Amino acid sequence: MNNKIKMQKQKHIALIAHDNRKEDLLNWVERNRELLSRHFLCGTGTTAALIAEKTGLPVKGYKSGPLGGDQQIGALIAEGQVDFTIFFWDPLTSQPHDPDVKALLRISVLYDIPVAMNQSTADFLLTSELMDKEYERNIIDYYSRLRKNISAQ
Image (cartoon, rainbow, N blue to C red; front, side):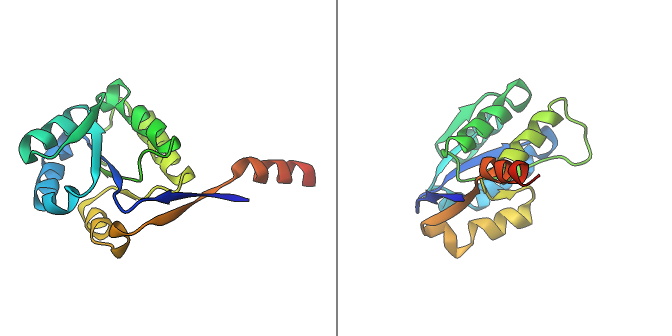
């Protein structure tokens, strides 16, 4: 059995960037300011503050990624309060909070959250016809699957 969670027309978008990618994300947000202004934005620490300062968009800030911000965003996803994530991460630099990043991505898949990790994917997500529509995410009931597999053994 699967659960459905409905995204509303106005999406809740998390914006995250590693240090070496913050400028890239800021530039992307600036180019897409008008589209993003129609939605609720949040982000981790410095990224949220920089976006709000540079664009004037309201961005609810959480802790910095290494200080628990990635986990806070993950918790919001699990609670149905984030619809998708734009995460410009640095694939060439080891991060002290790499396990938190992996956990955030795992939670995103578990709760069927679209995740853009580069500009091309972010562009495709933001310009999708689904951005201005309600959309039902399909949350797989892993507990039922596990029980079914155990009882079949």
